[in-house]
Amino acid sequence: MVGCAGSYPSPDSPASCYLVEADDDQGRTWRVVLDLGSGAVGPLQRYAPLDELDAVLLSHLHPDHYMDVCGLYVARRYAPGGPVPVRLPLYGPRGTGDRIRQAYGGEGSGLDATFEVHDLADAEPVELGPLTVTPYRVQHPVEAYGLRVEHHAGPRTAVLAYTGDTDSCDALLPLAKGADLLLAESSFQEGRDTTRGVHLTGLRAGQAAADAGCRRLVLTHLPAWTDPDVVRAEARSVFPGAVETARPGAAYVL
Image (cartoon, rainbow, N blue to C red; front, side, top):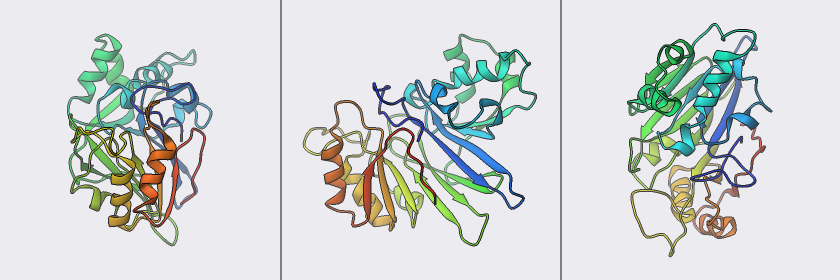
């Protein structure tokens, strides 16, 4: 976990950013970043050199999930040793390249030389070394995807499911089915937040984990005004497996 704060960085955590590391059959470690939200590129450097990332996938284009791509661009383009010679694959919703150009101030050629931008599409897998990442279109006010990450090296397939930002929707079942770990956003609280179509509560995240038969549930994307104890209790009321709230620096072996 690099960053797990919801909507904006907290005093203790950047916004959404998760580093996935997986070895292939030749022993090479692949490093894939899920979201790169506000404030995340700084602490990401504790865990991986910025010139050794293999891909970045953006669940959607709200600033707390993509804005630090601008900082990553600077690091890979303008380091004293020269630009990183290989373009970094960057996957996101339609319009990702244009949005990043706008965020950085309109620069085009440098960004095109730094990132190889691809559009995500519902249920169309992305192959990244030993990883298969399948995006599922989820329910949020903008085009948004949950990301199912499967690691095929070794005797079994390990599965991480990340909801991105979403309310309850049909896509959560194939996204999370049988996952070793479901990383579910839980920005809202039952009885406090009544708007639908935006975020999960702890209760709705727990129900999604139970319906999908997940082994472990980690609640993330909690804004400063959402009480971790409340959403954790909500999730535990319906999900029989292990439940915890995300914290920066936490690592999970699947």
